[in-house]
Figure 1: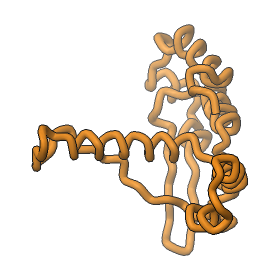
Figure 2: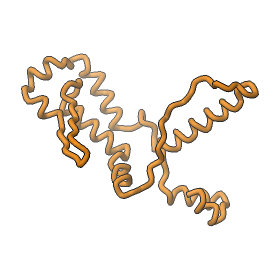
Figure 3: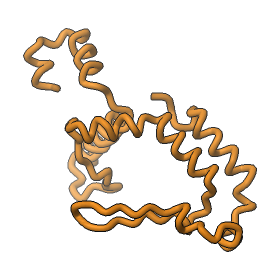
Figure 4: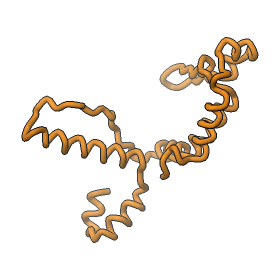
Length: 152
């Protein structure tokens, strides 16, 4: 997947922000749309309780919200959501990284290795691959069928 800054939908959003962000004023947005709360909020009743998503107090317009939806679609968020709800395994991670080690072993070499590993895993999670893609790469690298099964 290309870098976010190369995404056409992201570029449209940036352009809109450059041209219009200075005009946005929350008081004016509410004055111009007395139904703003209804237009920019969503109530969800779930098995676990009530959830309110309220975007009305953010400096967004209907146009901006549509651009955000278009951006999410272009980045594969819908497909990822569908995979998640179909039961695809999700790899949990907290994305917290220590800046300094508490155990400076061998001139912090161990910490540097951990940092490199953390960043590599985070990048892999961010970019992602389908199992079929990973399988092809592993097979092309000469891994045995048994090794491929273990890795996937």
